[in-house]
Length: 306
Image (cartoon, rainbow, N blue to C red; front, top):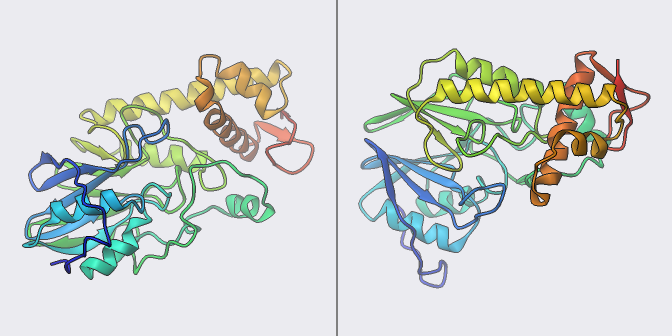
């Protein structure tokens, strides 16, 4: 049971709670944007004992709605974070303090990176991305295959890096909380060094090998045909890769030029995100020996076919 919170601590505003299936409810944080759709999905799993998945941004209105949904007769036993972008994890610490529940995640915001992404991060000046919760530190590490359970529910963690190095999915009977890895309304942003396209594709392949009935994403509605959605995402990335290779062969060398050649119908508000995806593809192509640069891999580098 969470301790009482004074009116001065949180705004007196509540959000809508929607049932997603037996023992699963969803609240949407008030942080809509081109990158978050209508806002971040926070999930409550269980009955008397609750797991909270992705508490969301540190927003007083969302905290108020979340505490109202928990209610005075339920106990939060675990707070789980799929990944530590600023729209998913910052409220975890505040909620943990109020409800006296541990925060679980794969690791801090720098966990799960490949050696190459760690080198790129150390070089600095990459910019971009969705905003990293740099101070995020879970109370408990939740490794690949680890199981967390409460009264009437069990969650199994799958490490699914790609969108973010510390990204995990959480499996329940009949479904998976997939964070930002698979969404029905948009493809996931992969922004180096936090995002890693090679890892993203491997995680897609891993999820595709499973037989899950439903996905509960970090933004947007549930995905009711996960296999078809994953097939689309994998095909989409492969087609994007082919278009980027074609742009390189046509003489485009800078990320901005390749982006303009490939993302011809992208709205201006999403052009920066598109450029980050191009950079992710170019890094992956260099890592696989399909493209190269004359110097270090940076956003200002000149890329060419290998």
